[in-house]
Amino acid sequence: MGAYLVIIGDVINSRVIKERQKIQTAFQKALREAQREYESDIISPLTLTIGDEFQAVLTEATRLFALLHRIELQLPDVRFRYGIGIGAITTDINRRAAIGMDGPAFHFAREAVEQARRENRRFVFACATPVIRRRVDLLFHWIDAVTGTWSREKQQILHLIRQRVTQKEIAARIGMSQPAVSQHVRHPLFRLVAQSQEVVQDELNLLLGTGNE
Image 1 (cartoon, one colour):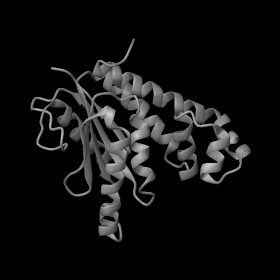
Image 2 (cartoon, one colour):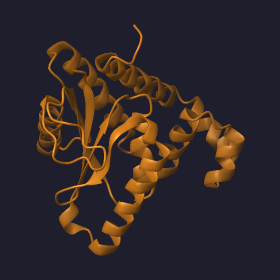
Image 3 (cartoon, helix red, strand yellow):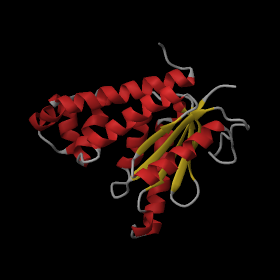
Image 4 (tube, one colour):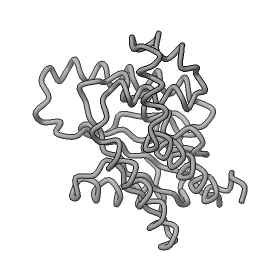
């Protein structure tokens, strides 16, 4: 029985969001478009579940941050918290919707999102190995602490740099001068965040059995 990565995404302060029907429609569209773009990484699709949550089951984590950013990019007025769990799934995989399944991967993801809610964090990670759990969760916490106050434009620059888009093209896409983009990219914390995200994804892939030592 292999390991899977389960994401539970939860809208922060969903009760105070105005035009809820409009947001729900945009939410569904964002999940559909992200599903199409990252389908090869996802075994049970991005699914809107109870309230303002979504779930998905992934087989690898190489593009985890890009996937989440893709969803957030479509919903600029919505902020998310994420519970991420890795473990076994003890029921059949539902390849049509991320519902009706059970197992440690779901239990860890639920535990993680509840902890994120209690501690007002955006990312919490849980798995069965305490040392790895602490190490990866600390990296998630550090990334969030640094990027939590970043502007939407700076988040977008990070996303595009990860996709190997040139600074010139980034500047054209987001309406910023190339020197301004370069200034962000050359900042030491920017590089450290990008490297930390890659390390997190590598650690998760090792747990999933898809990475290399």
